[in-house]
Length: 261
Ligand code: OAD
Image (cartoon, rainbow, N blue to C red; front, side):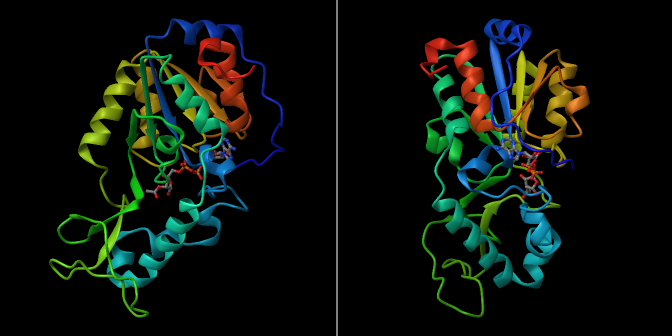
């Protein structure tokens, strides 16, 4: 993936995009790790800084990895939970939250497990890949709020059935929660505009949502400092950081949202 210098200033917002967004009845957002990068949460596939540049997903984020070494997987997620626990929403998350009272049909579909959209104040959020702050029993799927993390040798266990606990996130080779995926597909089908923010669109089924939305007549807007596999197929590509581009976009299209232009 290209890593050209990231422009600091917001790109000009094309008049055609402003018109399309003002007319839109329903707007959906598909966000990925890039929207949280300015909050200090590492992305996955950025060449130097991405998680998968330093760690092997097959050792940490699959059911097999957990079966082989539950403690290693638990500790890695505990480290990430702690990192994310200290992160605060940035101007990109806040711009989307400021839009919710102004655009009635706004839905944020996120691949992120960090909860930062909700922390910024967004309430219509679909989490496709779960949430890292939730923990569940690996056997029964029950959500657990307390656990004993004191063993140096093994992952904490479910107090009810004794199985290991795991983060409530979707691993590679696992299916997405049915209701979240159905809701995301509905929104992609019904929206007039889909904003695709901070994702390489490499991971399915989330990555098929832009194609699906386009097929149903939506305009696709990509917000990303770098080109992606989607870029050639979007209607508008706004090159820059989400924390810079989103406030500028919201100020240009919806002055009533009250963001400084
Ligand atoms: P990636 O790491 O694949 O992509 C992050 C994208 O964010 C890249 O296109 C960057 O150019 C872009 N980016 C970086 N900084 C940005 C900024 N400040 N503003 C906007 N964009 C920025 O992350 P995802 O596409 O989210 O899944 O990855 C999808 C899934 O793969 C994740 O949910 C995770 C991962 O494996 C699971 O763990 C199941």
